[in-house]
Length: 100
View 1 (cartoon, rainbow, N blue to C red):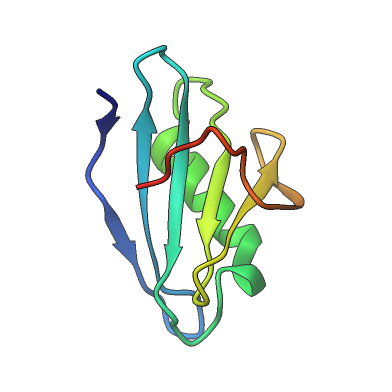
View 2 (cartoon, rainbow, N blue to C red):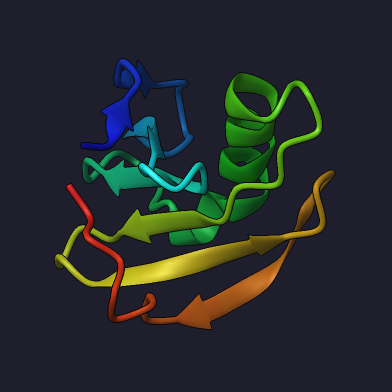
């Protein structure tokens, strides 16, 4: 069974609206899930700030979890980061990954 940590919702004027949670798998690996809630700006267009938020919330002790996001159309992609900042997008997610 995987552990899911509480979802958080963040909203700032002229910024994206999203929920996020950290998922830990039975093997000890994990990932972060972000869902775009169709705010004034999309997660895609606010990716730098979304990644900084996720790193601050879930990677405080050196963890380097991948960040997967669901856009307002329902597609899942990855927000790539180097542990400190957003570095790009990757289309799709690993097939074996079971997103909530």
